[in-house]
Image (cartoon, rainbow, N blue to C red; front, side):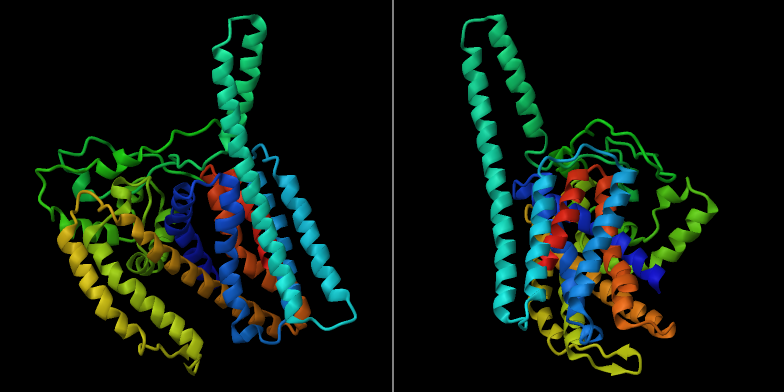
Length: 452
């Protein structure tokens, strides 16, 4: 069961969660590091916050769990990121480390006072996190003002009379500007092969060929140069043609995207990898039916007309059912009773909306409102990661009961490892894709958020 939960987490993170975070950060104009300290940190800690409200943690030592989870993420997650993908650290790292120490000291002061913890103390910690957000966004504004000022100075220097001193000054300013612009805004770049639809691959109108690179594993690598950025418009319109019918390859495209096994990769891997793909296929099929994909690296940005129209109905239906069932907390033996009382009313809105999208859209190009599927993707990803985190917590509690360990010992060992599995998978996946600063920001930003 633990392996199955870890496979679900890794699959959701790789195909849904990471692309969604990168696109949202890009649309908000964030840098890699700030996106990590805010969006990724928030996404990593929300499932843990949901797990805090589960009945299994009603008598648990919450502060011990929170601190041990943060330590595990920094030491294990950070260690794996820096071992697998060495990189030059952002100068803002020291600022966040100092702020993390400050938040730990404030929390320690509140806990060691000879008074009981009050709601006012919680407000103090929340204000501390708000001040942290103000600090990092103020730093971002200052960085952009500095970049604009350097650009003006360079333009003014080029208008001066030519001299060796002027050329040296321009060279220094351009080098400084290049370093500042490196992490100015997040950029989505290519990182390996992506799945493609079989019917479109055989079409004569498709000008591109599939990549045959299959990763055989990972090891410590030397830092590499920047990868080419993705041409968003090219990946969006690569299969578009006015001569195509609006529903060309509708069903074949649906079946290929629904297929949980990558048939192209199947031809180039060994028997062990094929067995692993077969074992993962039921879990991936459920995620495919539930979670839409919005990824600028994939042709048509992951758009599949029939599948996305079905997901407009299934994602709210399943999501509301799961949330209602968890809140009701009714079981028959060990099986939770699904609650459809609220979820069935979502059909009144989602079914007409799905019909409208189906009539309006095409199969060979995503509609202009395709980015709105990011909301369904984000909600579904957080819900699945939260449920997986809660289930891992329950399994760890069972493991502690079996070997007769105390609640506190289980909290700082098994529970902290289980609680940090999904966070570690997220940051390692981002680092291996080339977003090291994003992963670093998440490693330092998540503990600050959890302390608050």
